[in-house]
Image (tube, rainbow, N blue to C red; front, side):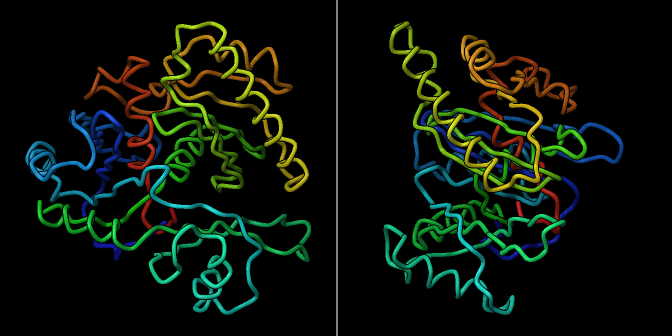
Amino acid sequence: MGLFVKAKKQDGWLATSFAGDGMCAAVVLRRAGERPLVQAAVFYAGRKPVPAATLEKLNKDMQAQFYRCSTLLGAGEYQLLTLDAPNVPPEELKTAVGWRLKDMLDFPLAEATIDVLEIPADKNAPGRGLSLFAVAARNAPLAQRQALYAECKIALTVVDIPEMAQRNVAALMEPEGRGLAMLSFDGDGGLLTVTFDAELYLARRIDVTQAQLADVDDARRQQYYDRITLELQRSFDHFDRQFHFISVSKLVLAPTGSEGLHGYLADNLYMPVEMLDLALLFDFSRVPDLQAAASQARFFLSLGAALRQEGTLA
């Protein structure tokens, strides 16, 4: 998702993401034939909206001017919808998608910034219609965030969304020729994605937060586990019908801070379920604190966003 004009910077991305208790910032450098190097990862405590003083400190601490910079929208700051692709020339695609979205958005189309991401079709069924993801966000909050970063002398290259950040992580571990499901949780809730050949095919939100997974009440926690399992089963059934040409190899559970969920899903789903250790995917030699599961959970989305590659929608 590239909502802003791109500017050429040196190698490496600096990505920021926001939670209820503060802002995460991570710098990741991709290297041919090696694990991506995490050059820095810093958490700044505080509540949204982030104050200018925090961004100014970020700029000073991480020398943001030397990197291409991105920021992630929160779950409530945009809408992601799946549509049949309109049969129009590429230069007219966003306009045509906008007209299809006008009755589906919870705000006026005139106030929306829209971007699109194609969902690749089955190569063996060329006659089948194409689908796409449409992303819509309100203009005013986007402009306010861009202005705030600019005020703090941080030039935003792109605005990203969590689905694409999670896709970037999943792409590092996809089995060749098979799809990969990934499930993560944060303060906004759960996020399920299915990727294949480094492309996003399915994205679903699950109404269970990271805090709820850590509930000390066994009965409530069991209800959350049941809700997650049911949503996963429904999502996988839908995916099998829509994308029968993709075989999903396994479900990977991102660090959550809840040890019980992994075992519960492994016992109740028909596919293998694995816990993700980001230390197997990234080089954390410069930020050893990220070896801890709690730190990996906190920085999961910012690390994924910082994996963005120039020339691809992310």
